[in-house]
Length: 119
Image 1 (cartoon, rainbow, N blue to C red):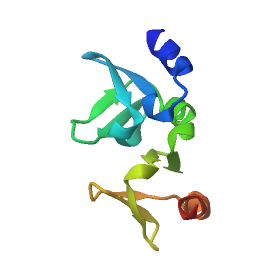
Image 2 (tube, one colour; image 1 turned 90 degrees about the vertical axis):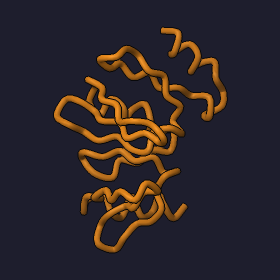
Image 3 (cartoon, helix red, strand yellow; image 1 turned 135 degrees about the horizontal axis):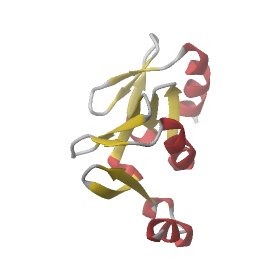
Image 4 (tube, rainbow, N blue to C red; image 1 turned 135 degrees about the vertical axis):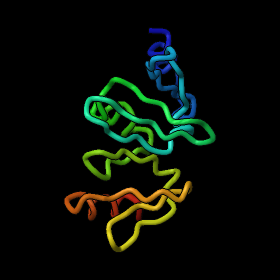
């Protein structure tokens, strides 16, 4: 509840914090810390900048609803990527991230992702 109130009061996107419940407790992350989110059945695996990975028991769709307004792009049914960490979009259908990971872009979403990244 405190996290929701903080986010509602905050006018700046840079102050937005995402509450992630995990087995260790609740972690509050700035969106700038999240490189990408990966679906794993009914769980979401967070790949974080300068931190370990973190897993949450919420679905990727739930996080997509929360993060789309904060420069995240759904590039595949199992991947939500932070635009800030996208280095390139390859012709063979992958986004290359600053941590040198390659995330597949679905054929259905390729044109949309290319257009968003061209803005």
